Length: 229
Image (cartoon, rainbow, N blue to C red; front, side):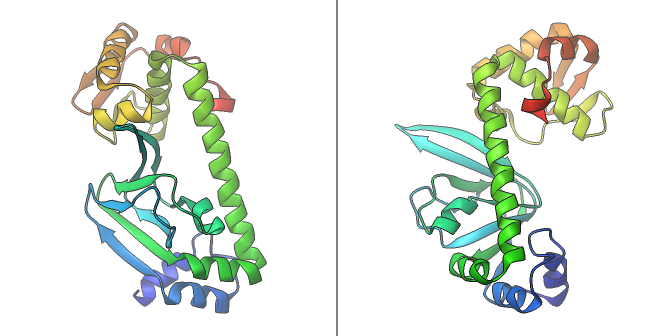
């Protein structure tokens, strides 16, 4: 990695407070690479050789069984993914592929475990990262278990609009197939859900979404702080 890249990584929350010598040891064998969209980064069942940190772009975490596939998480900067497998020196329980062009830091798993054992600040950063993922997993499970597909979509759109400036017009960051899988729906059910939301002021044009009646949409969605944050 170039000096300016190392300096930028040093400022990330995960590494900001750790000992300088330990940081140097950690990045010595690391790689910062740019990957094209749609590239398989890891496969479930494979040993966890690297800790991956998304610096730019977006990574889709997926799982498969019985010839079915589902999207579990969408990882955006700046976050690690599948940290637990690295810490346990175990296999990945999910696969990962780039959703868009992405810049990702790959840190050797052995180095992560060795440095954590002797650097309390780094270990604390990893603990906070794991805690965040646990809370995200609980929120995701509650969203899936306690809401209908239409309600999940409505809340997703309200959150997306808020993140993109609360203008009433937002853009889907992923294609509709990925969105359907992420929301636990089939593409057909997602299409019907968009049709249902039309009466609540939701207009769809490709990836562009217009929310002209946010008040009624919010009444339908019933946003919940302990689910949506």
